[in-house]
Image (cartoon, rainbow, N blue to C red):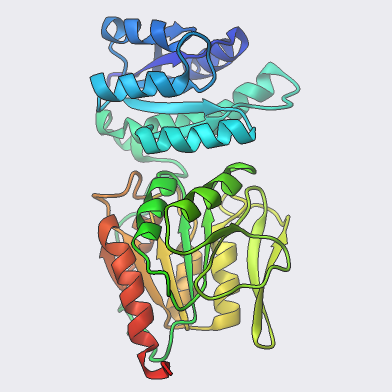
Length: 362
């Protein structure tokens, strides 16, 4: 089985060494070259023929965004994973990179006490993403195993008809590929959307705040990074902040957000399952759950509860998902009412919410 060929692009000698040593420890990967800036990287691509590039954002002479634009022009199918620091500027640049066509991103290790610790962090975060985005190159069973693999397809249980009555809230979960998917969904909503939306996108702190701002700028409804005690309003969306679980709590006629630092679930904080559990605990079956592109199975248990309460569930299809881990797990379990391409999800959300509430319109 051929190895996945990786070109490492970073101006920092320490980071280049950390990345290359981590990748060389994996028998499925091969580092075929390094480059200190984008200009050198563009010269090396035809020489070393990589399957994937790890690309630093902030570099001298030719930075990551400029390099990415050229890579997408010259090599539109070449996989690119951006490397970013945990700063506001870098978060904004990373979201811009995803819009320009980067496949994914990884944040650089910060406050790491040793090289061994840094390599362990890289092994956990970078290697699974490389294999996911180059999975078309590897068809062995080994390449599809591990925590990010789909569960085996089984005969789905009978799907219950969603309960009658109005949908009172939409809860949404996504991960890899999610920022662009969310942007498309939010652009398709209407300014008078009649219920609140609460959601989890697996991202670190700062990144979620920038994503909320970005969604607001491209959407007819405002999106907020959730804050503890914030009142949830219809026609507004609330994104769980990076590093914190988000739940909802109904107090009389009001619903407020609750944030906490509970243990990660599915190796994630925030976790989709935590939010979905909370929503069904407060709204019963008057819920529309939406699961879109992402690695792993976060959201599966939450959707199981939504199904038990006879709520509604919509998932993104495999063809339009960057990774069909999260939505695929829900679909394979038989919990989804509809499995739809990304471009139809906004319309399906709007239709289900409005039709369920038709009887209570003034």
